[in-house]
Image 1 (cartoon, rainbow, N blue to C red):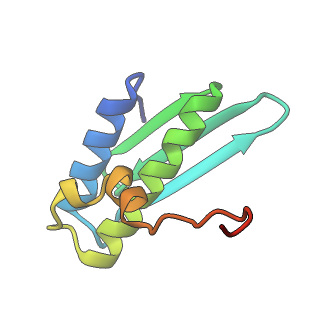
Image 2: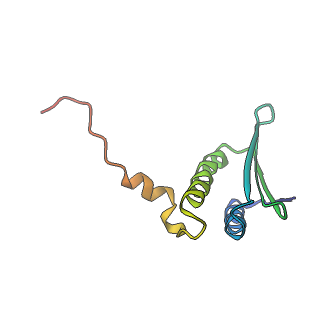
Length: 103
């Protein structure tokens, strides 16, 4: 098992791991409230990559990693990574109308 300290390197290596063998790659997350630690683990039975953090902003990044994996699993491992970023998804949503008085 390899603990990776850089978030960007962890995301990059886990996506490569998934693309190499999508059928046997697994993604697991574990949170211990008493310690306040989040551990993310991606494995394909040959290589195991882990990322550990106790920072709240890193937990927000985990949501983006979930979106990446959901997209890769739904659309296939050959999908373009530029389509997966969260910014386009947010911009694609229609703007909400205000709830104030109508004028």
